[in-house]
Length: 515
Image 1 (tube, helix red, strand yellow):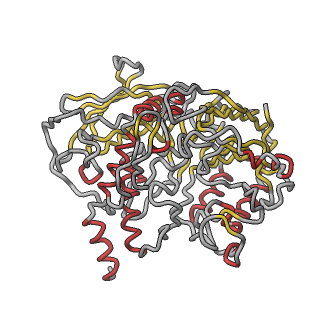
Image 2: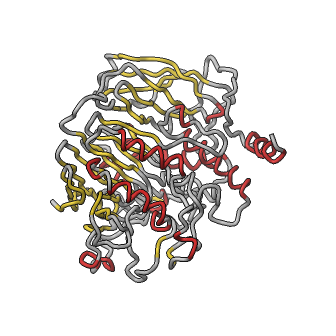
Image 3: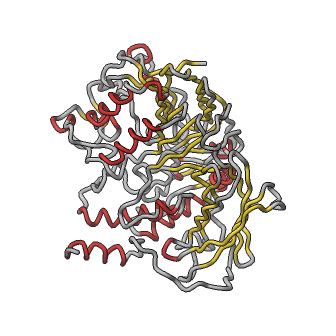
């Protein structure tokens, strides 16, 4: 091991960050808590046909490091077929480890496919809330119908999680969350939502403990807890889980690489600790495997992407810029070579009717109406060679019914994915549904008025709206339907939800049609 590598590993260890091995810890046999240890609620995720991940984190003092002693704690879990937890069908024990923030990740097996279950945790005489989850359809099954929702961007300071209140009552089997689960900015003392101030802590997180405290702030929200407790979630990250618009090992600001990777390691570990992810995603220092597939029988397959960890740095500087020579450099990557091969091979081998690319950033070009020759350098528009490789591949595989799901830009769009992203009148080869934010951008507004003219001049843009909310999707063997569910405001409580637009995609016919 080189001296620089030893120094880097030592720095990670000093921050209490997980490395390749998981050490043993003494186990606290009779834990007692001064307060409820389940303050952050419960969640489930990454469902398979016979099981699911169950999550919680022991945190009796959630905003101050969690409040736990440095021993491991064994936590009991139960899964039942009823919400009263009378008919328990699986039970077990999992260790909540201090080096992983006393988070709980129980990987349950032996369940029936396509079935609802309820679950809870128990430790030291304390019981968690009861959560509900659902297993995926059997791999060889052909469901007549599958419903899920997707969302992103829930800046705590920007508003109330009213959208999550409504999401928790939807008739769906899964939620896909596409990034910006937390925001890393320091608190704004003037941040308010209605009569309730919702500022961040007065610092930007750098250390593991600070990221844990930021997640605890978000996880303490009752509406977010309700949405997690209602369905299994499939999660991926974007930039704000670490640092705004970071690219691979490059920070937004001029920070030395090793220093930024130490921060990234802290952020990645905190992300794992607070999400219902499998052990395969346990981070190894600044690296974490997040891209993966989630099946829904032979009706749908989610290809969950990571567009942050492996990308090249933005060219021409960040932001919206005219093209510079580096912009079109074919060596610049978004997914990285390994993940790109994994994606193309996975879709090629898929037997699913619908292949879903669950990812973070706008894939289609969303033009700037005031500067149409500029390109957004952080999303796929800033990586034209990488995008064109995928577009060429998609064009040859339209029978795979590829649908791209996107978050990030705090506004809803429906885009027909065209063969040449810079020529919106070129052939349609796939469909992209872009969700607005849960709160980011505050109340928002009905439409981006300056884009109205683009509905005729940019023919592949079918819809846009900048209110807050999420999207529900219903899939059948013959049709995909997306309903844009939005609330009129998030800065005060009580907003109703309504379906403001609906679009369908027909099997074998790429492109969206308004209902």
